[in-house]
Image 1: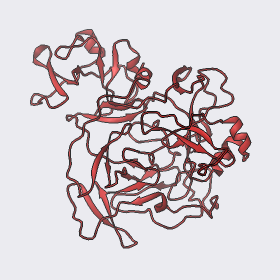
Image 2 (image 1 turned 120 degrees about the vertical axis):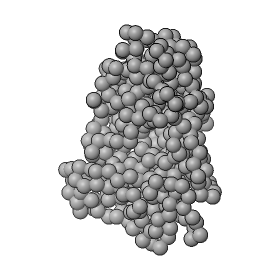
Image 3 (image 1 turned 90 degrees about the horizontal axis):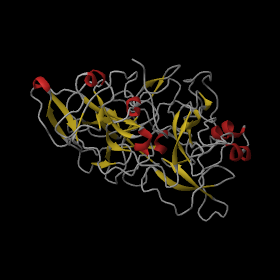
Image 4 (image 1 turned 60 degrees about the vertical axis):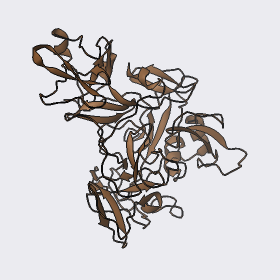
Length: 439
């Protein structure tokens, strides 16, 4: 199963990218979970906020038009049912403006466009860099090169970046094109960066193949169609070609011939990896969970589990303001989370949704998993030297939890607790596998 891949050691191979022209001072960072991303001179990941339709309107930015500014928004926008516009948002005295969390990537007055990099004029009189016309920002949650903590708190949205109509309008990391031949693409899934066709169908390899010959022919090839290369295709880098019958040539990646699966019901499916000998192709595997964690099978799929075998959950939250600010991080307001997990009672939250404890000096070996100190009385990050601080495991710089009703390994009673299946404000199990849209 693909869960075995997720629990394996950190990938030796990293995703290759196509070099593109870049403004002076910018670079590409190879991250351990999101592939190559653009970064500023300090190594901070760059993000865009693409416009998307929500249930009652839309949020985000259309190409060429920045909308993230320094004004503190005080009321809901009515984008999400069943909540109307005009409700006063919580913790107004501490509420940040959009640019307090998302700093625009400013361009100097003498900066010049290059390639897909353009310069936009902001209404505050400054200039901002854009890539492919999408305004660019850095996140205050990223402190070191290679961190992508500003992205969605989980990797379990649909792999092409789409999500449910009531999920928040998330920001997404921006990077150079993946180095793949025409007809292929790379998508983010819980297991890592997965190879798909340009139509989003999953790509597989077969254990019985060699680097120069396919063991899948006749009936096998009907079930697992080989990915054939056009006549003028040439080998390049990690991509090679093998000869098949009747003069056909088949693509191979890192010495493995490539196939799709005729029976796949979903785009970017991982069902085929359940067939002995067949595996989804990852150009870069995601980092494994911390030492002592495991992958547990449940009635609904495989999940990440803590050292006691209990399902691990992430908390999702995006408010209903027009700027769709996050409320899933300990530095954000805790009003939403405490309402969901304890009906407004912090003590009930800790009882029903306990943090996954960690040793203060524990290390995961990746950027995506870390240890943070939490104030148990507030849910915020603990102050330096706080005596009762809790050391807890965090995923993308956000604490992870277990659920009180999960008594045995494989229980997932806490999944989708909250608003809109836990996508807008609530808890989601850390599934290690994701199925996509049906044909």
